[in-house]
Amino acid sequence: MSSQNSPSTVLESQAQKAKLPPMYQVVLLNDDYTPMEFVVIVLQKFFGKGREQATQIMLKVHREGKGVCGVYPKDIASTKVEMVSGFARQHQHPLQCVMEET
Ligand code: TYC
Image (cartoon, rainbow, N blue to C red):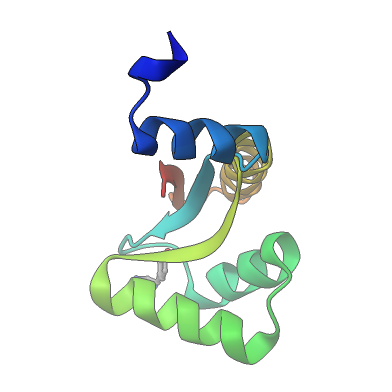
């Protein structure tokens, strides 16, 4: 059986054995209503960004439609999405946060 494995299959299985998990980008989407200051606070509170970097990411989302907040294993990315979405809902802002496999 193993004699049928191609070199790339062997390398893939070694990567899995090295426990490299699939990674997910957590992405903020632009909208017309969420205040810029609220987005900056989200980036500081949930993604550990400083005020300056948070402002840069917010402006990228505002100008380009989306922006990456961070890259995490699946369960952490999913928790971030739920926490940000819940925080936005509590404050009655339509801010959307999604995850995308890298
Ligand atoms: N476009 C929003 C505004 O003009 C600001 C904004 C930025 C909203 C980033 C969402 O993910 C977002 N108030």
